[in-house]
Image (cartoon, rainbow, N blue to C red; front, side, top):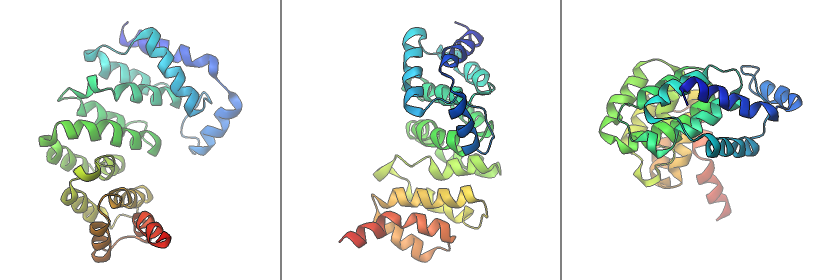
Length: 230
């Protein structure tokens, strides 16, 4: 199946599940930035699974073209489906794949896809190719692109005790003067997640670093909740 055939088949497979009422509500929730079929997340994942059982997954060297074709289709569920397919380990084992992930982040950009790509595609890829972390994150930061910078803050969300603390804190300090809601929220989210494994470090960092009220509030949620329950 060619990339074009795969993309068209995916769209045709989803189309019978369209729900116009849900679609309107989902589009409104996303500030009318995208069209939707109106398929709830659990059902969407089932449909994606059924599709790949019947049609397989894109050939390794055709993934980039397939993703880019589907990414240009209007329905947001198709973007979700292909980014979930692209998160398979077989695709992450490619030292050039980060270029596709960067393209996905920078196009059709909003928090719903960016956050998934950051922690499920970029994160695992950089964990596999750790020697590339500095180069990739510096490039993302220097791009000036809001969503690539948010990715730098969030790609370690699932690293837990393997989090590169110095890297995380350095980029937070570089971005903590930003007025962007999505940057401030990401700073808090990244710190909150890291606090589950190293609360003392996060407490010390937040005490000695100037953060926005939003970032600080988000960062300390887990720590304060635990303290209140003791």
